[in-house]
Amino acid sequence: MAKHVISTPFLVLFILFNTIHSSHSNNHTDLEALLAFKKSIHDDPLQSLSSWNETTHFCLWNGVSCSKRHPNRIVSLSLPSQGLVGSLSPHIGNLSFLKTINLQNNTFRGPIPQEIGRLRRLGKIEFSNNSLGGGIPSNLSQCINLYYLNLIDNELIGAIVPGISSLVNLQSLGLSDNMLLGTFPPFLGNLTDLFQLSLRDCGLQGEIPQSLVQLRRLRLLNVINNDLTGSVPLGLFNLSTIEIFSLADNQLNGIIPSFTLPNLKTFHLSSNHLTGELPASISNSSDRI
Image 1 (cartoon, one colour):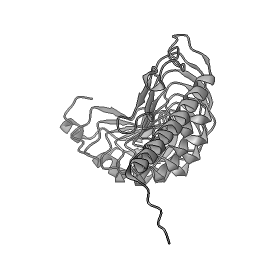
Image 2 (cartoon, rainbow, N blue to C red):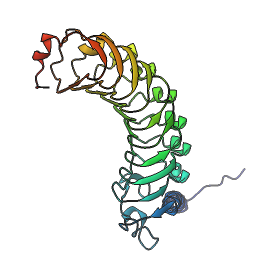
Image 3 (cartoon, one colour):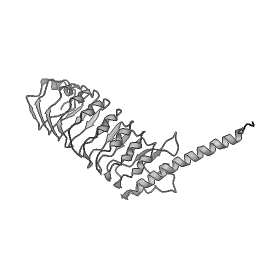
Image 4 (cartoon, rainbow, N blue to C red):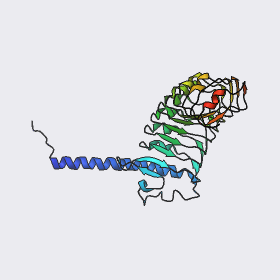
């Protein structure tokens, strides 16, 4: 039986054709996702998206950065403080190489699309100071590389979704100034890489979970102005990494124990039902409070 042998020149051309075809396909996917994102913007007062047209390659568009290793694949979308008004297109879920998205300080309304859970490479979400509503997307649990999640100062409702407990690489979690409901979820204590936890003014109820004492890297704990009750877990007063310890404006009770917090800079416990005096050990803190 005769064997079919592919000549070397033909093989090179075949590989080259497929490489170009694949690159064009990827180019089209990311381009279409960006154009859909732009279409969902209703007002662009600073003309920050004026470069977003097909006469310029999208890797050169304002706020867009592409990968050096994978040309034509977007790794960063950063448009903070541009006065943008609109909604978040579900097509952002097609930017499969995206690592960072920063839309801080704009006026995005409507829900955070569930499609964001497709972005497995995503490490940073910065959506603070917008008007995003609806619940926290349950599909965020699929963003397994997420280390930074800031949704502070929006109009989010509902509970803190259990899927967040899957984000084992999370270092910073900001959900303050939303209209969340429910209790302070114990599963946040499983995020042992966490060093910032901001849940100020969220409408949280119930007790501060004992599981938080597992957060041995925690530097900032801010749960001011909620409806938290019960006593403060004693182990929190022994987290040596704590710099900002803010539990004011709740309904916490019990005493403030003796503690040693060598890195403490801010200590807020006012407007609770705590009893007793500040322990003398507070003078051991390295900064004045």
